[in-house]
Amino acid sequence: MGNLPLEELGNEILSTARNEIYLSMRFLDVALAGLSFSLNPGISSTATDGDTLYFQPRYLLTAYEENPVLVNRAYLHNLLHCIFSHLYLPPMEDGNLWRLCCDICVESIVDSLPVSCLQKLPSPLREKTYQHLNQSCALYTPARLYRILENSVFYRQNMILLEQDFCIDSHEFWPRKKENSDTDSPQEREKQQKQETKWQEIGEKTRTGMETFERQAGTEAGTLLQVLKTSQEHSPGYETFLRRFAAWHETIRLNDEEFDTAFYTLGMDLYGNIPLVEPLEYKEEKKIRELVIAIDTSGSVQGTPVKRFLAKTFDILKSSRHFLKHMELRLLQFDTVIQEELRITDMKQLEALSESITVRGFGGTDYRCVFRHVAELQERGQLNRLQGLMILTDGYGTYPSEPPGYPAAFLLADFLRENRFRTGEPAWERVPAWAIKLRLKENEWRMEHESI
View 1 (cartoon, helix red, strand yellow):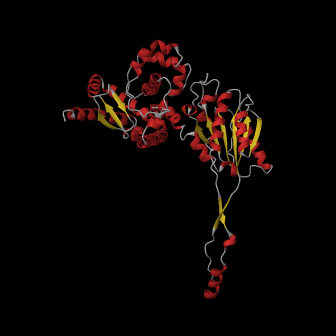
View 2: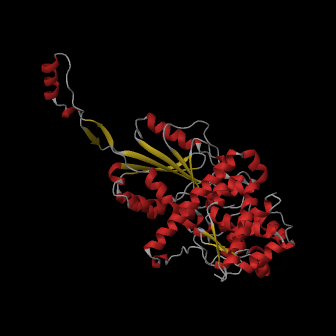
View 3: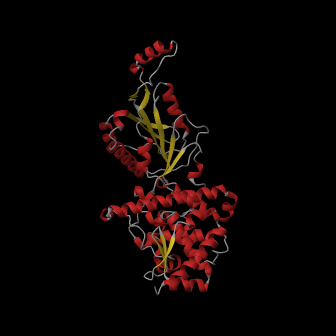
């Protein structure tokens, strides 16, 4: 009970910080309601586990007395980790650098917000850090920063100072997503999954709220909206997406053979001109459906990630017991023209292809050639039951102006590009509104250590 006054005081300070952030950025209302407060004397500053914002009372009181802006920034720092799902990303090999990259991401957002309750003069080291990173990366994500800094002389020379400047909170309560996570109990894994889903939904609602009030959000939180869009682009995972997109559907239709004439005759006998008709039975028709996967093999795309994508795709399809019984696969490689087309109709072809695929192309990128090719096949009486078209690409190319008559999905993978930090409009924004978009997670594909 001796800690009760400190806890009440801490709760009041954090409530005040929450109110100030809300009044300046109302689109964060749902996110701000996502964390409760709890005193924890065992930590050095603040921390979160996705449900609770923990605070060290001495740190909180000292920071508030020095400048309430520090508390506001610490609150938002933890909140952005949750909104961007940093807690649930698989960590890289160097845990300290990975935590630093997560912190730099959220601190750069906080520094970019022209909101009075968050404004603080950045240190010379911060300005130098942002200048160094901006030379290679236009939009920060932990994986991108990790690739830049892991072999950087700048990081080795300033490692301790960077941690002191950017590491505002403790990450000790973050759920651990590692290879040996099987040691977690089913209850712990279920709780973590619920938390992750909760923050994905909150992130989507926050993004929607910002886009609804675009004028206000655009001036107050342009960088936040950009990063939030990027964080939302990688949900769901590729395996879940592929299983849904390539799901085999049975066609249900009326079964005319099951028409019962007895009710018809009875009605005519009883009422003269009013037949009784029993609802017809339904039957399932098993129809072969087709799926087209097009691979962007233009000059900006690397061969090794393409092969890894195909290997994982084939593994997922092979694990589906219905796929090759009821679906045909067309695999296209293209740049500005179709470089190769393969038709796969059985498991042996799929297994052989996964071992021997050769990447062809390396010209420019014109997605229109893929849609033209599919249209030509349909005109020749092929692909009449097309389930959909998936295009693996870095997103930089010429798109068709009109939507096709079937689902088309662009799988955006920044790690495919040789020049991974090219500047310009993000690929996500280039994709037409009529298309399905999915950003492939860099962590999910384990591409972080590919040569840049």
